Length: 430
Image 1 (cartoon, rainbow, N blue to C red):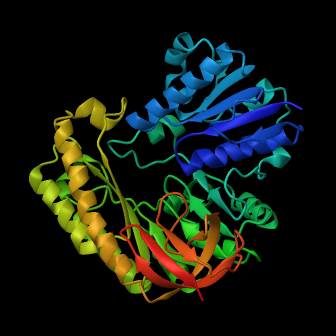
Image 2 (tube, one colour):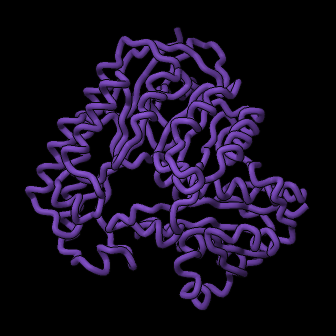
Image 3 (cartoon, helix red, strand yellow):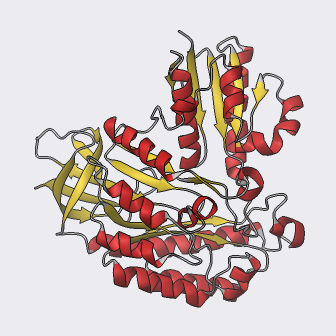
C-alpha cells in the first residue's frame, strides 16, 4: 500500500482542501498521513500558502526540506499544490527540480490523476480529517469579490464561488456521522454565501439547516466581512442555541483614511455600529478580529484611532499583522510602502501589549463562572478544553483539573473557572 503524506500549511481553508484530496486517495486504498515530521511516506504532497511573506517563506522552507529527503532517497515523489504553487509555479520549477510537479488551487482532479488514482465526483463531499475527530472546518465558498487593496486572495483563488447548500449539508451530515461535534463555518467571507448561486445571501438559512443536524453540538462562524453584515445572520445567531456566541470578524483598521486606502467599503462609524448591534443582540458574544498596521500612508494619528478602537471594543480575541506588500495587489501597484519596518513592528507590539491587558481583564471576569467545555486533549495530569468562546488552534484554552476523574476527548463537561492568565483559564470539574 502506497503511503502519502499530505503536509498542509496556511489557513483552515487549505486544511479542508487537503482533507478532500485525502478522501479521493483513500478511496483507492492509499494510506494517508498528515504529518510534517513523517519521513517514511512514499509520496509527499505539500499544500502551500502564498498569502503573506512569512507564510511564503514557511512554504519554501518546507519544500526545501522535502527536496533534501528526496535527494537522500527517503521519499519517492514530491508534489506541491495550493496558493504558492498557483502564483509562482513557473518561477519555482527551475529552482526546485526535485519537485515532480506543481498544481494550483483548482487542480485537484489533475493531482489525483498524477498520483495514479481516479477522481470520483461522488466523493466530493467526503473528507479524511486531519483535525481531531470531534471538530472540523466546513468551507462554504471559495474566492472573494471584495478586492481589498492589500489582499492577494482574489488574485490566487478567484472570484467568490459558493458551494451548493445541499452539498454542504451532505458534507456536514457525513462529518457528524463520523464523530464531529463542532463545526467551524469558514470562507474568505462567510456573509456573502449564496449570492452567486441564489441571487441573495443565504448564510442565515445555511446556519438554520446546520442546526437541524442531530448530533452536531456547536457551530462556529469565522471570517465574516463587516460591510453589509446581514441582520438575519445576527437574528439566527441570537436564536439558535447550537450557534456559539462567537464571531470572527476582521475589521483590519478603524481610521476612515486607512479604510478608504484599503478599499474596505465601510466606515469607522459603520464598524462601531456593528459591534454595538452584535453585542446588543447577542449578550456575552466573544468577538475575534484581525488588524493590519503599517499600511501605506498610516500616520500616528491613524494608529492612535486604531488603539482607541481596541480600547473601546475590548475584543475577546485579537490578532495584528504588519503590512507586507503583495505583488499584483492595488497597494503594491498604486501605493508606496512608506511606513518603516521598525515602526510597523512597534505598532504591532503596542497593540498586543494593550490586548494582553484587555484579555486578562476579560478573563478575570470569568473567574467564578460555570462553563460548558469540550475536551480537546490531555496533558499530564490535566485536561485541555475550550468553551464556546474559543475556536481551536487560534484562541485560548481551559486547563482543567478533573480531580482524578477520567474525561473523554470530544465530550462536553461543566467546569467552574478558578483562575486565569491573559490567554488561559483554569478550572475544576463540577
